[in-house]
Amino acid sequence: MNEDLKSCNMEKSNLTRSVHKGRSQNSEPKIVEWTEKPWNPITGCVKVSTGCANCYAEKTADWLQRINNPRYKNGFRLTLHEDLLDEPLKWRKPRRIFIGSMSDIFQRAIPEDFVLRAFETMNQSPQHTFIVLTKRADRMEELSAKINWTDNIWLGVTVEEAAYKDRIDCLRNTPAVRKFVCAEPLIGDLGQVNLTGIDWLVIGGESGPNSRPMDEEWVVSLRDQCRLQNVMFTFKQWGGVKRKENGSLLQGEYHHDLPAVMRD
Ligand code: SF4
Image 1 (cartoon, rainbow, N blue to C red):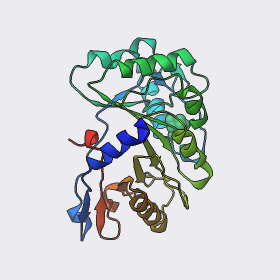
Image 2 (spheres, helix red, strand yellow; image 1 turned 45 degrees about the vertical axis):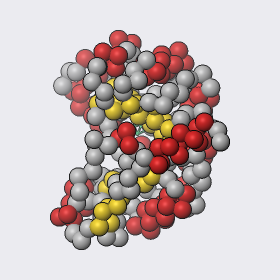
Image 3 (cartoon, rainbow, N blue to C red; image 1 turned 180 degrees about the vertical axis):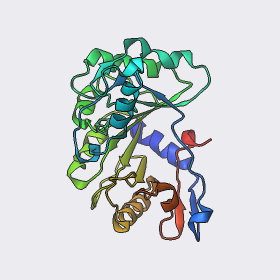
Image 4 (spheres, protein in one colour; image 1 turned 60 degrees about the vertical axis):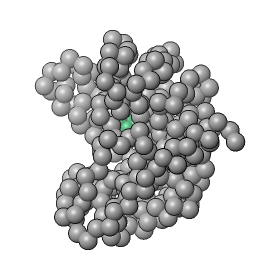
């Protein structure tokens, strides 16, 4: 068995299936926040696909610019923060770190050397777990051979509708040890999905005033495919305008599978 698959299976054997029965939204269990700390050596981005329409990072960057936060003097225009590249090395306490909550690290406009240095910081911080999520799967795949994929790095692609399923193929083609798919905001039926080599799938509906609806059928289909393909499955939320009230109950159950390292 190849080493990647072996480690994926080890992770799965550590998995406690977290399926809670629920009768009402009042019994909503608290979902563990798997990211504890953002790390943003890059800010700003360009919209690349339909899931970007209501980009939270764009709204946040605009607001931070208005209140004169020096990191956001360019608003949502791509900006590199060289001085933050080694920030996690200074954090002694182990953390789950989401890189690029205000950007996408695999944008073509970001110099290759800058991207590789960010990954070197991850390699040098084994105490932390890093979550890297992108919609630029083609560049991710291109650069992946130059990256040292230590097992503290979770690499994921966003797939918000069927038109972007080829991002999963790009992810599968990388040598990353830990791989996940983020179907959030899920705005279309993904249909049949090949999850070979994928450890974890996360689904969430879009929230906020302009949120687009998510059909229960799409979610049930993905849940069943995860079960068949032995992939961890987290259903975060239905989303919508009343996100908290809408909760995450799916056909009487909560699905909060998490990789061992993501649990508190
Ligand atoms: S890729 Fe992410 S950060 Fe960039 S515009 Fe789209 S949603 Fe926003």
